[in-house]
Length: 258
Length: 302
Image (cartoon, rainbow over all chains, first blue to last red; front, side):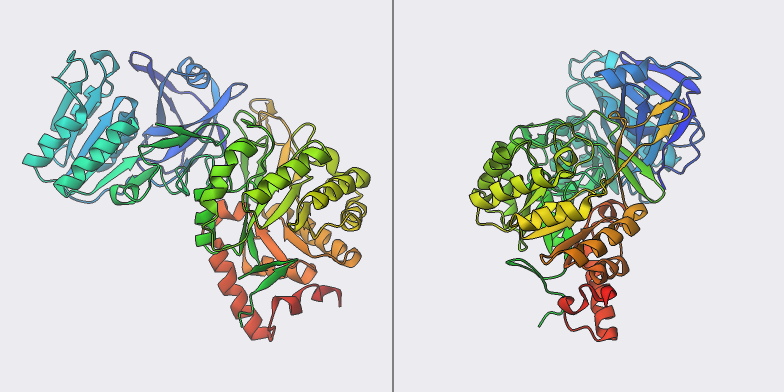
């Protein structure tokens, strides 16, 4: 049962430029990669990946729209509605794991790193456009012995894409699985890289969502529901979905080229 | 011969389950997927003349025994829906096109377009409880409903089903008007008007404030409506409202339904719900000596 609970915000942390983590008590088990529907009364309700799945639960918001701005400006003690957790999360094997995150995609990957709970078993690659948009670098270093950073403009870490860095890691180390979250173009490139390296991957997708429960079909990608059949999909499943990397839907359900 | 075969006007269904409108019906891909999951027929999201965004979130409240929703009829509009129907036409099962409009002429225009897109039948949404100027605002008036059905019947050769609202004491009167106007069947019921208030936020949760209740909570209401309609009508009835298991579907059929739509259960039970229902029904019919769905329709009246 995923009924909405009204919770009081118990923590607000600025993570980077325009990025804020909101913490709240929410006594349900959340798998890494699952998401919550978060309601700011009077404003909107939005799907948010859980970035903290132990203790006080949490989400990490980039303030791009009205709803996310309202979330970022929440204060301690404010009341929000939270329902979920929803969707299929990451299925994490017992071997070595490579996490590859772009921008705010690090949120669900850090939940995966916490779940793994062994700094020797997980490597983390963090990508962003500029150094200001990097998030969770310290948190990643606490969760992993090997953390590497790339930025598109070279303002921090390596200049280039996080997928270029992933390709190098896949060539020199062996991983049981790659977990990825970030912009879809990045995920398309990452899936291809994993396929070439013959390493399975699980990638977390985003689509416009209304109900969050698998009912309305607003988030459909080739007939699958990102909210219920995903948001995490196996790389092999995504290979069978022509809309992956090419098309998403607007609020009316009309296709938009990516 | 397949005992689960269901007949609805000129349509033949491999089993009596149908995907209800508003659930996984906005894209060709999702309709196909529901057909692959075993639905005997699929009904599209209600489509109107123009694209509509629907209401802002929250559009859904999850309850123990169902959902309260006010999506606000989001849809890509009849023009853009051509591509979805094109993709959905690969469906091995009948595709029922659901349409909504604010006048008989607009309904008729949409009906002609859907016929051109290859729909197998039409479902007239005369019952959405939360969209201003549409749905049950016209669907509670027998005269208005009859006028819509007549105009649609005159403009297409497809079977026409009218989806009725339970939010009126005139349900049977409306249904008789629909039958008199030449409809090929009725679909009952749409959601019940409902509201959920957050006592902490001191406001209704849905952005539209009011919405419609679906799921197991409304099944006894739906069964009663179908029972009453079966006593009053000669045209087939498609039951809908909270059916989740084969037992629920058999109950609707015994009340008088010739087929049963499944909506909320696609989320509550998963997409496999259609196959689960069909296999449970096969067993039940074998155990109880029913050789066809027709033999079961309305037996609770005897």
